[in-house]
Length: 112
Image (tube, rainbow, N blue to C red):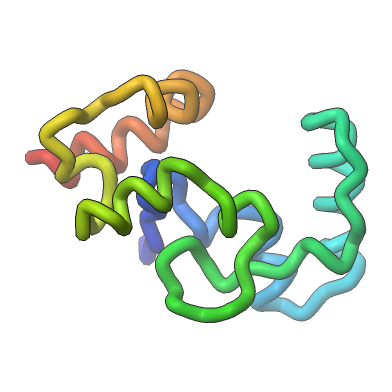
């Protein structure tokens, strides 16, 4: 299975924002905006659900990814992802790894 592993270990190809963008589906954008608005208790407009993936190099990134501390740290250190960091797993990324066990598995594979 093909993957785009983000700096934090999440698989961008499984992300609802990524999927909605790649399929150019306003229905999926709407579903994602509604789901994430409820989940994160903040209003996320449908037009903010556009993303080509954390490491795509493209200009379309979900608003959180643009300001993500994990992404900024890994980029500053020139790392493929946090699995390559000598400080793995720091407090910055640990909350993601606890919430999404598959992200930890992806980063652990990088370390191997």
